[in-house]
Structures are given as structure tokens and as C-alpha cells.
Length: 305
Image (cartoon, rainbow, N blue to C red; front, side, top):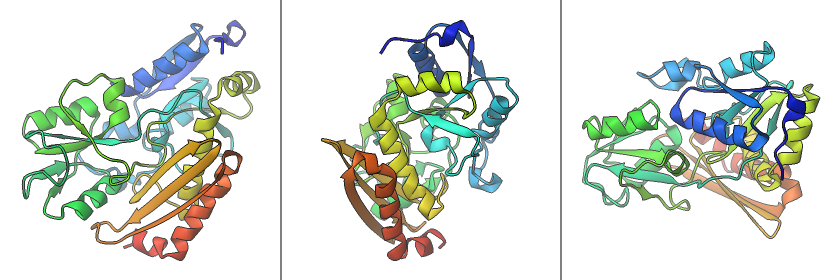
């Protein structure tokens, strides 16, 4: 697919200011053409470094200011990690997926170079502020001390090096995108499942912005759209968000989309799983089906524990 310069109009691409966010925005910029500019915007989530995001509501903390910039015509499109996008967005916005999905695995990085969570020394500390990660860690090793850890990838690695924690969990996609050279071990996805939308970069624009949306549609990666829609459909049925202990793994094989989702109690002691599959064009229905199955198994009760 050839690049399009959007009829020579300068396209203003909004992005968070972290190194990973800027990398993602530049990948989008490269895809859509040279006649564009990346504009850095500091979000509420970037400012909160000393406490859990859930304390501040959790929803939209990494996207709110970018939404407002689009609405006020300060930028034309915004680039996000899909896992940061709220489950329910304003009807005026449209989401587009023009880049391939990266690895969905999480990785383990530790001071003793342990290869698995199970092999970590007893009673060690592990840094993460993700309820999904924390619940899965506790399910595997209830003796580990979970330490809330915020900040971008570089900040968290630096805290590990300074001994603030003994180990950390990060997304493999970010590690690869930033070409991080520290030693790490990818975790097996079937044992340690990823977040909804992990590894997916999404573009958000106004539905009424016809010229831009027409070009973004031409550039779309259809398979990534189907995976994203399926996973977010499950999350919507459960009314979950980034602070929910929900993990999802989806894949496409010969136009068949397979989706598995798990819900964990916050202490990791309870876990339920459901799955479904079908034609990729039924992605939303597949995701919805999995969500409904989880509800029948008591998923909402577990999430509210």
C-alpha cells in the first residue's frame, strides 16, 4: 500500500510524550506519509507517578487530553496503545488500526535473571500496578510481595536496577519497540495471559473527518481490527477496564478467530475461563459470546470481590 499525503494537508498527530508513545506516533507518521507532524501532549496518567491510577478513576487517564485536543481542533488524529483506550468512547470518535499487532507476551525482568515467576527466590518483591498482572502473579506465587510500580518502561527498569524492587513485569511489545538491551524472559501467553488490546496501536479520529478517515480505512490492517473488536467486545459485556483483572488471548487461523478470556479474583485464588471461535467477520459476536459465558460462570461477582 502506497503512502498518502492526505491531499497535501499537514496532518497533526497527537501523542503522549513518553519514548514508547513517540515511537508509536512516528510509526503511524511513516505509514501515512511525510506531510505530517507529531505533537506531544502530556496526559493525566503521565503526571501520576506515585500512586495507583484506579485512585483517580483509572478510565481515560492516558487519553483524555488527546481526546480534548481532537475536539478543539488542535490535532487531527491521536495515536494510542489500545490497552489504554477506555472501553466505552464517545460516539463522535472512530478507531482505526493500520499497523500490525506486536507480540502480546509479558516479560519478566529480575535482578537474579530468573527465567520464570515460579523460579523467583521466595518472598521477593515484584513491581507492577496492573491488577491483571498482580492477580496472575499471586495465582502462581502467593508468597511474592507485589509492589505498585508506575512510570514508563525506562523508569521502571531504572527502579529495578536501583533495588526498589527485585523483579518487574513489562510488555514485550514495548521492550522490542524501544530495543531495550537488558536481560529478560518472555512469559508463556497461555500461562500468563495478556491485557485486552496488548500489542495493538490504534488511531483515533472524529467520525466527521471524512477525508482522513477515508485514507485510514484504505490503510487498515483488517485482521488487527477483528482481533481488537473481539477483545473489546468481551470487555464491554463485562463492563471492564484497565483496572479489571481480565486477561484475553485471541488469534486468527485461516479466517477463524479464536478467543479465550479469563477473569481472576484480586488475590488470584479464583479464576474462570471461557472461549469461542468463528469466522473473523463475526469478531464482535465472538467477543460478546465469551463475555456472556463468563458472566454465567459468575465473572461479575469475581470482578467485584
